[in-house]
Image (cartoon, rainbow, N blue to C red; front, side, top):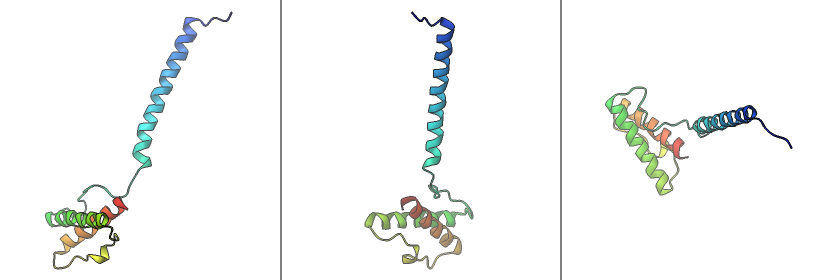
Length: 103
């Protein structure tokens, strides 16, 4: 009859444990990169003034409402008018990011 000594069994157990840990770590890391999206949730980057951030938020909300009502996600149907350039830059970026995120 074939008998496995204690040293061999410990080696196999250690190898199996290391493999389980490595596979689990790979899965956790891979999940972060497999579902990468270009839009980020309210990054408010670039010209991060209050007007830019307010415009970004408003643009993202408008895109979300368009998505929920079944309208096309197109910034051209809601041009930013009558506001500052900072606000409009944020509005356009917010709309585009949200459209990318949803679309």
